[in-house]
Image 1 (tube, helix red, strand yellow):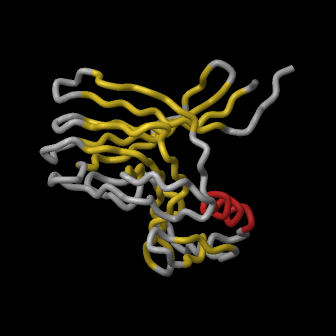
Image 2 (cartoon, one colour):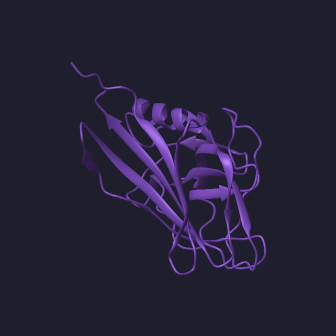
Image 3 (tube, one colour):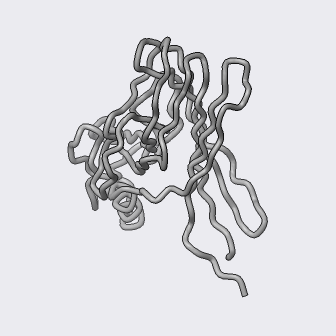
Length: 203
């Protein structure tokens, strides 16, 4: 008899040159949901109404944020589909390699959006449809970054953050942070695609 284990998360990294030719592709397991993730999950399960505030998350800026605290259809509680140029949520990348801790609420060194030196152009983050696999189910969160900086960019960490809108305003919350097994070099003129693959399967 098969058993359903805990859902697994993998990070897929793909670098392509300006002609679209593959430079590097790799996949590694993500180990680094931070405390905000389990806190948000518990808060949603404990809320009889969405305007309850059973728990507080920590924003990218380090502030306490009551959650979910939602009252209208215009509020979002776990939104990851960041638009082009948005570098505060969706998939984020950074240049830091500080070891991950449970209480991380931001990347160690966020690489900001832009087309100048030291920056990457953040394209939109997409959350793809669920797909049935052999004995399981999965979906992907995907973002492509373009290097128009004029030089190589080195990526050492990746993260996943959400946007929350509630009665208090808007906050950006980091749910996961991983320091990559080895740094990724993104040459000038090339693209970096990062995929979070969240899957659940019978083992």
